[in-house]
Length: 234
Image 1 (cartoon, helix red, strand yellow):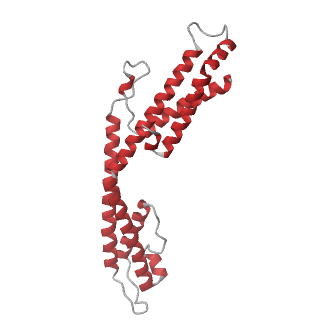
Image 2 (cartoon, one colour):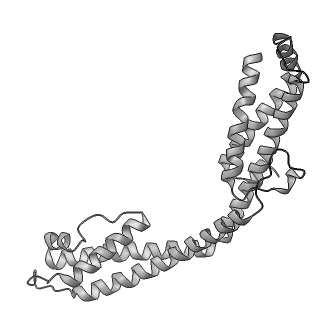
Image 3 (cartoon, one colour):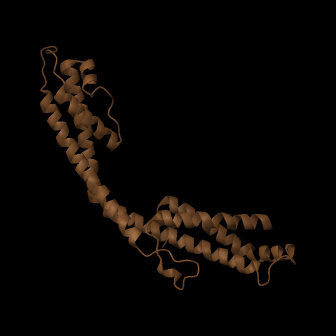
């Protein structure tokens, strides 16, 4: 498939690998000949730099194919999760808004010091886990801290504020859990998939990467030796 169908990071890696492939195709024979002459009399019987160069070219091509395939699988998985992720993001936005409105209400009714006392004085973050933790802390403090005397004739029912925050927090945690559960199931399927065959396997093409990480690892571990070989020989 064309590079435009994969993520930008993967497309960049494939383009880099293609450059190395081209260098091997153009210079590989000369590199092998120069290396053979340089190490004449020192090579073990049956060893061939030409064969090594061909093997490296094959390895990097296979790594590029694995990387491309894995990235497309990963993109498809993210697309499949679009609904649950959208629900999670909407629930998180609702929780952040609830925390900010609660802070404004408590601050307006009882002042900045009391807002700090019940965990609503700090700025609301953008990380889901931290905002949920902030909300949980505020819920506990709102329910266990006595409200002071009225401030400028205004009063806010702290229990009601805590109830709304808890509803939003539970909704966000439930939506986040649904996305996490899907990711966990996908990881278990990956671990249960066919293992990568050894170098001597009779059917090396049977293995397919389960995520972009495996193919990316293969690409980055194969590419440097190829470029080093070319640089040293030219």
